[in-house]
Image (cartoon, rainbow, N blue to C red):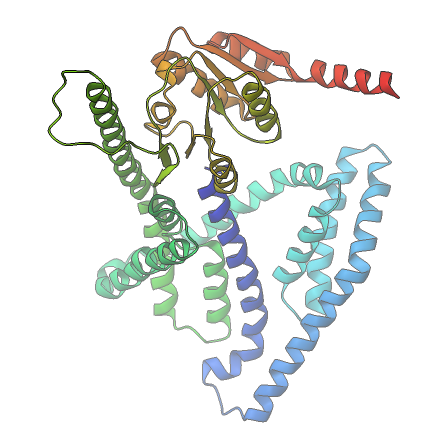
Length: 436
């Protein structure tokens, strides 16, 4: 769900959590004497500790903003000029570790904050994707090592020794955290299905909780029992999360089927009401093509129209050309801001992921004559083509790609035409060149 509205919300949520946790990790050592209860700490000493930590954090941030943002990109550019991928990989790792050591030994803040700022600065450079690929293997290695270490720390006897406390901790994570996430997403105006998806996605403990728990144990803030409860509830919540998604998918599928049934009934009733001698028990209000219902918009039945999947810059231009030819266009889009803009322009649009149950029915693919796919995810394009062909074998399907291998896969899946995006770009450049 990474490219969907739910995916973007969940990703943003997790980023905010990670940023907050970095600063929690920074403040724990400063507040350890107060939180652990070891000795009395006066208000003056507490203010001094907080002030000192705050000054150290600010000093480190200023150094990274004014020096790091210049030195790190400059260093990476020098390394890239050598043409050695191994040296570039080593440079990325050295920068991350160097910033972490700088933060801890020179400014007294956590390794996590230093590594976080190193990654943030690298992400602003033009080499961010290359750096991400270069560090991918190391990231995967440490991820595996991290979870293996967590598993070794888990004490299974906690399930027998304190089952009620473990259950209470688990309920706080799975139900309490999810309920809070659901309410916050709903407050920002997103539909219940989106909020429910986010709630299920967040119904588990993140990896930073282990770091905070271990740091709390080091500074005698958390007793061993609390650490065991956190580890136990974390592992159980992670195990339960896939089953929650299975339940969510079945629930959303049931909701989609109910919506599709409601659409069919209304459309059939409207069709019968047009007949001179049809008897309808009660007048039925026509369904608006702009009515927003959860994750999709219900539109009246239509045929011989064009369905557009993806309304980005390319899709917007396609809509303009099709409207100029007086073509009827139904759009499927999973970005809420784009959906809102299209509905403001009175364009029928179904909101949600194209592969969600009932979504292709919402834009009446079975009755369409054309399907244009402008998204770039190869796997999703192939799945959409196959699903559309199953609904309408006579459908004329057009998509695009820059890779010959992908073109063949799209054709094999059932696409009628695959446009060469590189060729189109070259033609546009030459046309612009001829006008200079």
